[in-house]
Image 1 (cartoon, helix red, strand yellow):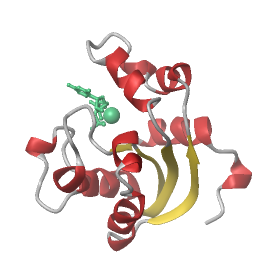
Image 2 (spheres, rainbow, N blue to C red):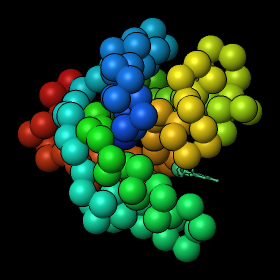
Image 3 (cartoon, rainbow, N blue to C red):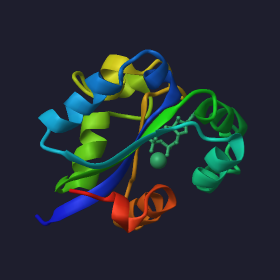
Image 4 (cartoon, rainbow, N blue to C red):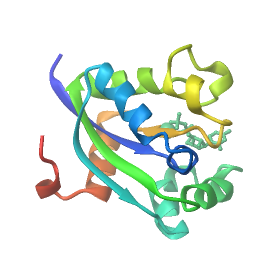
Length: 140
Ligand code: UDP
Ligand code: MG
């Protein structure tokens, strides 16, 4: 399996509860390396553009409000099979369904406020990384 990069967000519910380090540790323990990271506070419009794929879903407006409610940490994670590995460490979208030991099982508050985002495929990883980072900010 080739070395791969994926995009990750530590969401407002987690940054507010001071869980940034605990969540990064989960990624690092799983063999993923943080090769870019920044803490930023999105506007609702920026959150809406990032999540545009969900704009017809009933939870879209609430999701955009939530993502703009406090700072996030945007990150690029690198490792073997990083896209799938990140999804595995994150756990299922709904924390009630997330496997024990996953980030969402341990930290998520609800299906909406679920602590982390992770790209779901190579194409989305590429687009999402480019939305938040320039090539110069990917430092290995
Ligand atoms: N979401 C929500 N209600 C739902 C499904 C999703 O509020 O019923 C939110 C949740 O924050 C989720 C995000 O929308 O992480 C994107 O949904 P997706 O299905 O892509 O889940 P993910 O890829 O984050 O597991
Ligand atoms: Mg998704």
